[in-house]
Figure 1 (tube, rainbow, N blue to C red):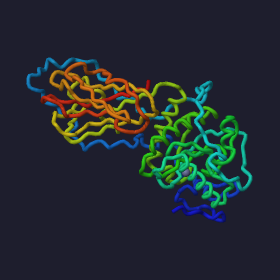
Figure 2 (figure 1 turned 60 degrees about the horizontal axis):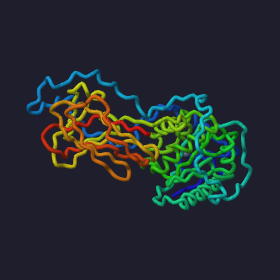
Figure 3 (figure 1 turned 120 degrees about the horizontal axis):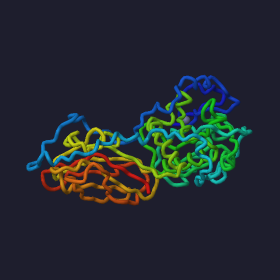
Figure 4 (figure 1 turned 135 degrees about the horizontal axis):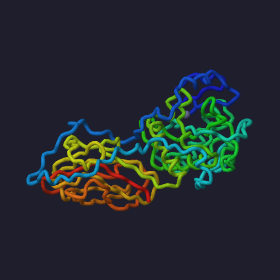
Length: 422
Ligand SMILES: [Zn+2]
């Protein structure tokens, strides 16, 4: 399934699989013309990641009927509701200077010798200038389920052969991440220069960018699939290390398609680049990571029985969702991308008014298990309420769900959650 372009061609087609990421300087051709055809811009991608889509539309502002016995006077006059949270996936804006003095731990990177590369079949050019950006690729190879180191190394050897078949002197990209999260040197010499933080080898991964952009190939195809959590975690660490070593701002992380007319790195991975920039910025800043998922966020999902209201001024943002208790499996879910294994505080925000449920089940998913916390939503609203601190594993998933499975008839409420790395 991997067609290979003979070295005698001009690489003019653009099906953008792994073999088509660029060329050596010796084969500059018409594809250089292509890079001007793609709009360059961080903001081009949607901020959404592979989160479940929101449920079918519900009435925009249904006012919930008050439960029996509730009095209007019980509705507290809260402070003005908080404004919508800033998009947690918006690109960070740390200038390069802000990186000075920050030490980022070097991830384990297997050298060409370690993964069994063949010797280069020609001279590898180098430049003494540092790269000014990172380009993210996918290899457009199979989404293997063998996440072992051996499998990752084998694919790296396959890639080198594919690139030899293009007439290139060596693997085209500088670095490779396997689906199991193993990081490897790509083109010979890339690793030592990265470790020195000075100069780079000229790659063959994106025409026009090969002597100024570090190319990272992610094994797999991410046109519709989401990268495995292990791959994502190592990719964040690797990008943070590259940014630190070379003084590259995390805003300067792009997709291959930003420079070449190509589908690479796939719609899903491309849509995650704002998140990548944000997580890399957080890693560089050494600050705690935190995300808010509101009921209007892309990470929220709920079925049609969860109606929308803006009744209480204690709501977070513009609205919240409510449902009647029932012994059904009909969760309102909040999903997020937990950036790394670690300890996280989980909090919930809801309007707490007399007439809402006194024992609403909140379920927290850690990646290895779940805990159910009963929350009295008849009081104490309009603020962040801690649901506890949890050891969580990295990955994009439902982190908090609100269940309808409780007693009584008073509404259960799903409004917003906040997750903070400790
Ligand atoms: Zn690419």
